[in-house]
Length: 350
Ligand SMILES: O=C(O)CCC(=O)N[C@@H](CCC(=O)O)C(=O)O
Ligand SMILES: [Zn+2]
Image 1 (cartoon, rainbow, N blue to C red):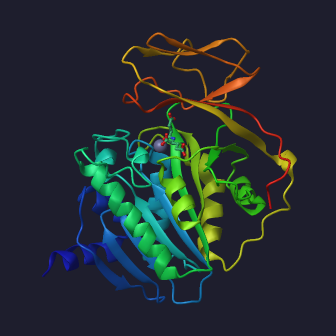
Image 2 (image 1 turned 90 degrees about the vertical axis):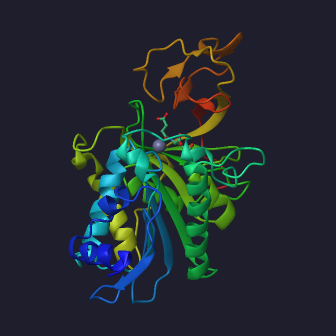
């Protein structure tokens, strides 16, 4: 019996692709099988499973989680959806690629093993003179799996990628999304309505390129792509999954319905922010003046100290400038803080 068929039988019986991936941290031999409802299931690698229903489809959906292994709630959501699909409890109407990004980081309950996977996309995994590691190799593979998935779907199709995370700190706005920089292309009301249906009414509009997974799918493949922060980091078993009911229901509708009708767009339903600046840590001596329990979206008065990087002090230069993702422990050269200011939607949205 080949290794593939060994794992296939158990996967078909139990649908537990998460455990299979955690037991094969960096590699799993590809394999495939067909469900009784005609859906083709293709395991491309550890943490990478594709579902192709028999019916005609219109949207190519990528749902990623565990890009950071300690962000467990999105992993639990995707684990449940995969099980329900394989066990025949959820019939798909769209093509779906699920990705558990970093199985080893799940197993050690850490954000990453050697390097933050979500800073290695858009080609940043392979840099001349920089030694490869498992995360860099994985980022290159995940890019290829997403690229192949969209290419197999063909051009002129709707493409979306929701990279599901949870935040290290609490947030004044429990759920929020990062809208990758679109290089002048218009934002989409339909995507904001999808996010609102997920329980996400707060969106940060990025204003520069990034090396994140969501930016890669947006910029390289033209996907409607977001990093979606669904709550706060918690260990497995400590998530209050009722807080994710709207998200799960909306994802189920997205992948199991031919079309989803969202409510009419109303700008007043949203809190939109423009990313004002990104502060990188360049010195070992890096600190924030606020406490570790200061929440995302905490606003500061103009002139308040925001961060100290060695001898460099950063001060709020807009009244109400708010902090997002403060993290003084990032590697040198990486983003330690984003700040945002409220954005009034004017034009450039369709
Ligand atoms: O809470 C934090 O400090 C980080 C939470 C998280 O992992 N956020 C993503 C955001 C990615 C983006 O900017 O689109 C990350 O930092 O990778
Ligand atoms: Zn994350």
